[in-house]
Length: 171
Image (tube, rainbow, N blue to C red):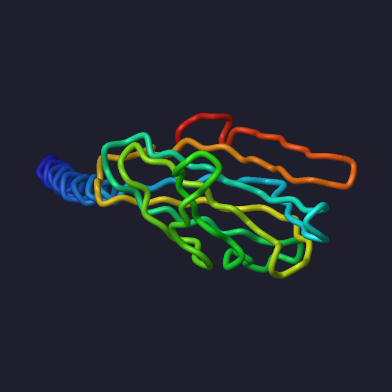
């Protein structure tokens, strides 16, 4: 009886040791994160009655991060192809990084703006966006901070508002 108990205990110990290493390996994955941006809205009726949504993301790491922003309209359709990715340049101008794609590279400590635009489609849209990021650095667990800016003009004047994504906390 004593020999059986010791054999069983030894078998259990070996099993836990082997499984323990397997479980530890599961947590060594390519770090990534995500956030949701509610209340995305865009419309275009004329040059004096339009609104745009900007999602501004900043990479707070020394590694390049690949970002993907998927925008869903009021029917749950992916309307990300309506987006443009910008970077700053001279005062009053923006440099377009990409058009019609929702995936882009964000360099170390760099920032980009993803803008939904209804100008060419002449339609309105409201919904939400999902931001995802990934990196080849497995040590990264948080890489981005961001904000959402909604601005435009109506016949009665201009409007502008901002809010922080994830309450301003890195994700």
